[in-house]
Structures are given as C-alpha cells and as structure tokens.
Amino acid sequence: MTLEEAIKTALDYEGRIRDIYLESVAATDDPAGKKIFQQLADDEQRHVDYLQQKLGQWRSTGRITVETLESAIPSASRIRREADKIKSRVEGDHRGLRQQMLSKALQAEIETSDFYRRMVQQLADDARQMFSRFLEIENNHIEAVQFELDHVGRTGYWFGFEEFDMEAG
Image (cartoon, rainbow, N blue to C red; front, top):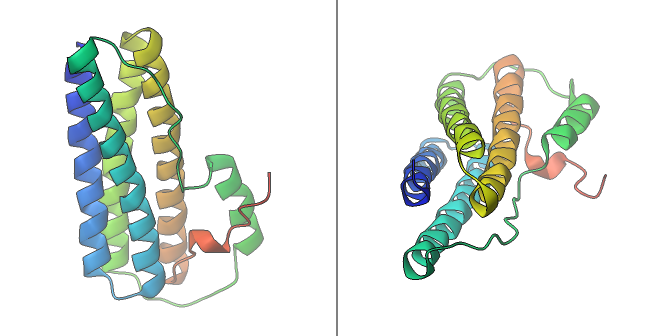
C-alpha cells in the first residue's frame, strides 16, 4: 500500500469513527454520555484534520513531516489506574442503547487500530512514525470505550473522563 493510499484509508476509518460518536451524541440524552461521545468525536475530528493536512503535504511535496498529534483521551495506563479508584461508586440498571452505541464504537476502534498496526509494519520512516502515534491514540480510545462499556454494563451509569485525575502521572 502506498502512503497516499494509507492516508486515504486512514481518513475513511477516522471519519467513520467520528460519525459513530456524533450519532451517539445525538442518540443519548444523558449529559455524561453526551460529553464522553463528544470528546471522542472531537479527538477523531482532530485526526481527520491532521490526516487531510498530511495528504495535502504528500501531494504537494512528495513527503510528509510528522508533528505531534495530541489526544484529549487519557492514556490506557491512566484509564486503568483511575478506573480502580472509582470502580464501585454507583449502582443501578439503565443499559440498552448506551451499550449498543459503545459496542459499535468499540468495534470501529478495534478495526481502526488493526489498520494502523498493519501500516506500522508495512511502511517506513516518517509514515511509520505517524501511524505509530495513531495506533497509540486508537489503543487509548479502545481502552476508554471499553472502560465506559464495562461501567455502563455493570452499573447503568457513565463514568466521564472528567472524573479522572488528569494531573496524575
């Protein structure tokens, strides 16, 4: 796969995931759920913007430079640490649509992560570096969505990322 094909494919994946999160924002009336899905949608939109810029750069110069790609979603290790702190705070049973939305998002994140893993294995140099960062971020998204799915499934309530101590190492 050429770099241009890889970037175009990544744009398809990122756009699809972003749209799943935006649909989920519209479908849930729970403020915590809306906030979580919006944070994830915003993160995916940043990915789309970054990839579009890289595609334009590739087309105009025949190369890409890799700039830092930030994410608003905590790292997987931070999610796990913070999850232990808030594990059993609430109880209840309101699942349904929330679980379906999260399950759909989780499947899309896993597929996207698998694509990035293949690109890291197949491409070289700056392309490998760029896709490595996307792989890291998407793996954090998987962890975050799985965390939310686990808690919604067990308790019926959302645990928002705002409950995490973002200052902790």
